[in-house]
Image (cartoon, rainbow, N blue to C red; front, side, top):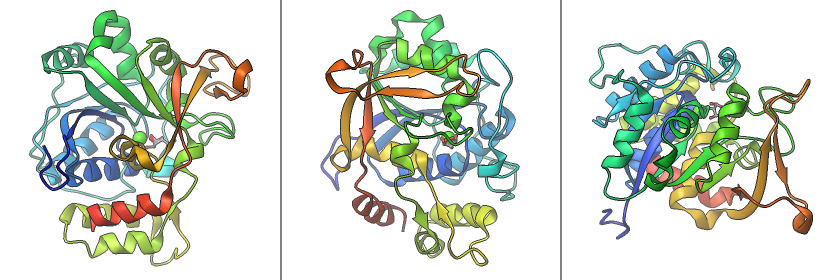
Length: 312
Ligand code: RIB
Ligand code: CA
């Protein structure tokens, strides 16, 4: 319970591939005091599973957040892993170097079984923030079809209506495992999608990042060091960074800053130029029956003001 906001905390599991913006989401999630983070799962994504897992151990150690961390899928259900070095640097944290003597260590038991046992152990369904490729969740639905009852909702950072980023048509998290995304959509679990249209509507600029440098929170100062390692902010004053995963988390505890639109989403699995593309059917009454909720139109000035209140 959060006594300052007099609000019930959101019980969440974070499924992530740190990743610079994943790191912002984890730090925000903890410092915001709005979430009861029950567990974290890593997944291969921005960088290979060894690095996304090590980065998760590092961020959780720096947060002194002693929650279960599980090492997740090493690649997509079918096909080979892809990575996003262009966006997160060679080690996934912008090249920021840290000591590997970490307090938090990932559990390497089967992540699918771990997910199911964990979800069943809670006294009420929990929210899953899926801010990396959806492989872990797809495997969970395939192995345990009755798992839906233990999941309150899934908030997915994924997809793109107007354009992609990994390719012109596909957003990275979906492109990394399109089949997994289709399986999650078909699961029927209540799911909210934040596509690039929402997460890149506005970027966080150098001034925002410089405020983190002087934060009273050491973990916010760490976020500055990570982003600076990637963006070299002193020589790059016009840098603008899209914190896709951070925006995704904020839609959970501040829905008032977004619009929620029922939508049918399909995933292109076999396109010559469009594999991994998400098709949001926004045709109104002629659209196919909705299977998801599009989280749209972020109120960025309120979001940015709030993030600074939490992180600085
Ligand atoms: O396309 C943006 C998404 O891909 C974000 O989750 C980022 O961390 C990368 O995983
Ligand atoms: Ca991510």
